[in-house]
Amino acid sequence: MALFTLIFLASCGLVPKKQGGDILVIGDSVMAWNGFAGADIGDVIAAELDRDVVNRAALGARFQAGGAATLIGLNIPAQLSSGRWTWVVMNGGANDLGGSCGCTRCDGVVDALISADGKVGQIPNLIARAQSQGAQVLWMGYYQAPKSTSFKGCRPALVELERRIALHAGLRAGFYFLDAEDAFDPTDDTLFASDLTHPSQKGSAVLGRFLAKKMSESAL
Image (tube, rainbow, N blue to C red):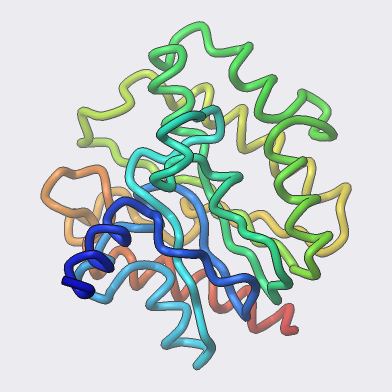
């Protein structure tokens, strides 16, 4: 019975969160994919750096989520628990665009996430909170998925969102932006899962190594 309860609570995101640690990964399904196989991006970072990694990223997670979504781990800012972390690795924004504005007329959603000058918004607030807990912060931008049928029409808004995040990285010491497009070949179908949107285990390995390299270069 105790084991069943633990499994149930874990599936609902209700197991008490670890308060601080070495490396924390938060965000959406790109970060979480392949977790059941022990091969998500966080697992790859852990193996590459031989460090402890906690991955709280979740399928469908977004910044603008409340209520029950927060309780089951679908609010990205709420995935960052209290306590000190050495690194926080994060992504997000696509589900906000897809869920809030259908990837069209999304200026207001993008502005709420981060202002045009890259200075304020929900994303800078989360980065500042992570840094206040002692962490360096690494943001992973999205890769292109040209054969995907998900998030159609989102690319212009995502490009603008990530332009602003990259701008913020230039304004804030200890915050780094990496564009997954610099490591992820959109013409290589073996990097994609069967849905042609999320990374395959090979794709997660490419992304995890890409992030781990940056972390080792900026070692803490």
